Length: 190
Image (cartoon, rainbow, N blue to C red):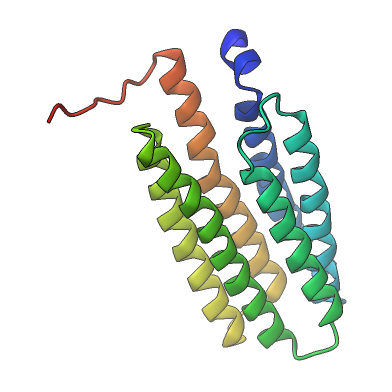
């Protein structure tokens, strides 16, 4: 276990980042009044924090060949800035647009890296593709709910962060399990 994590620190870093998403969602779920005062301002601060954490995680990884963490940091920074600037507009429209924009950005970043893995004949592209599909689905469903003002914003973001973190945890855990030999991904012979 230590050897795999020592050779691939991005596995541990990804697990920690995704657990932080789950913790953020759990805090929002436990204390929904946190986001009731100024939900746009509150959510923008959360994304500034995640931007900083992604940048720190990028520099902590030994191999900076993979720019996915850096692009996610940039996306978090752009979304946080967008929300901070637009905080005085209509909340349901801004929050719905934010989730839709964040989902599209996440799909573009993760889709690019899924394609790279497929070109390299790395079977982890299958796991990344499934997470890509599920993230797109929760982003779409959350943005529709926010546009229609069907629920409390804080609870919607709590569910969004929790599911975002859980779905993203599949990738580093499956990468660890395949590298440690617990799971073998079978390659087809053509």
